Image 1 (tube, rainbow over the protein chains, first blue to last red):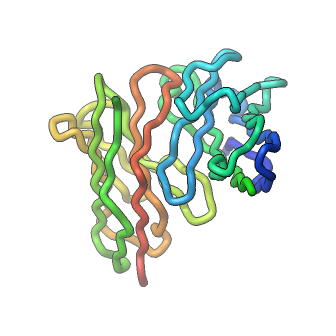
Image 2: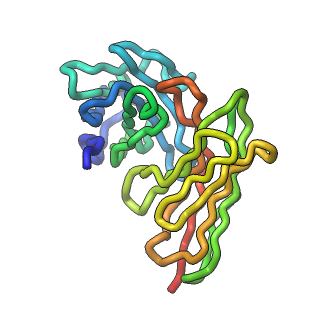
Image 3: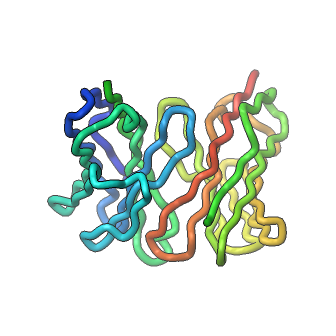
Length: 115
Length: 113
């Protein structure tokens, strides 16, 4: 069964450093998303991406964040200058078009630890 | 704005007990409703969904019915197993293609043998 994959599974970085989290969505999907889950809290939407542009973003997704689909298979989230409060589990998700747009399939997540 | 509220956890049950996890929502229009499950150390998996009022989603013995009159989507299972121990998230999505999911806070379920 097709699945969303994410790398790395765990990333440790120092405050102020740039990180890139990588995702490979399901191959025929059209919509791509990033969510995050701070430890013990709810899953929060960050950004959605369709047709090579951001379709929606939350107030969390400020100028420090960017997304890219560089090569038609990968979908990346970049944090330019990490802060301690960026420590969280980051989930990538994708969904298909038409009726399939209602079901989002999630990757296993990348745990980001900022020290 | 749209929001989802779940019952507080953790919930601890004995094997074969009946499970209910309450979920209510606030939304404009006619959202789609979902339950996701997160097993220890894993990502989110779609458990079941309902896209319109009175729809019943079901999977792996779990059920939830989309009740527009009470704005609820409670998760039920008649007989839980130890392997059902996980965190359960209720979520809603607007009826626009590619729209974001809005999650409840999650309910941790622990099933004891």
